[in-house]
Length: 128
Picture 1 (cartoon, helix red, strand yellow):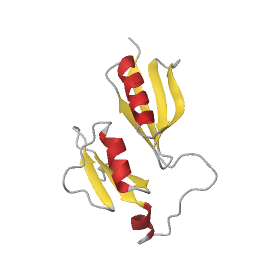
Picture 2 (spheres, rainbow, N blue to C red):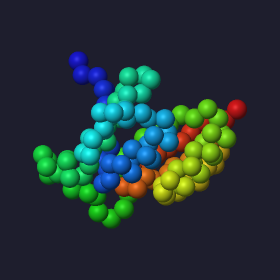
Picture 3 (cartoon, rainbow, N blue to C red):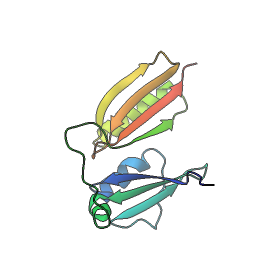
């Protein structure tokens, strides 16, 4: 039986992407190189960053055209103030605000930042 082991995110600039995602607690360690980097979450799931050039070297993948985002990673935060802090920190690191923090009707304080390549980073915490 197959099990989910990793999530891949395609990026245009590896160093910039590592800097951005490290702000969310991902540690890419010494094994990162110019085309591939991996971070393992406390639960064992790996987040893999691969450059566009690397992916195009073995597949027919092409960057999306016309907007929308490529992928989304959702990060559980400690509380609403942590969502707000990370949102501002990611904007300062060059991310683009997609949804400013708000209290969502489904019971979470929620926000979305797009990274430099248009990948969505959802930040959320349960409303207390």
